[in-house]
Length: 82
Image (tube, rainbow, N blue to C red):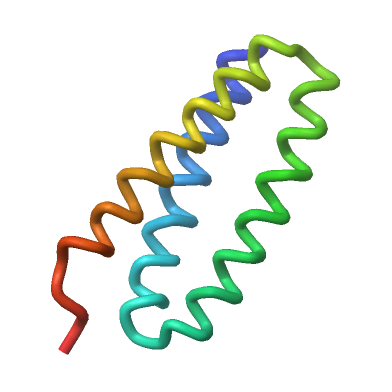
């Protein structure tokens, strides 16, 4: 059951961060608002996951950190949308 939570969070976080990149490149203000919504969603999800299992919660935190670093590196080193 735990692997299902991790796969679901990996898919949803990847999609959310891909949408964030496209919104942020077109309008940084709307992108920051969307990022705030992602952070609130992630905090709520982590709260629920840590109550389910500490190991799954820690794995999800590691996944969130790695996806976030990849996303922000992508934003930093690519040119803005035309």
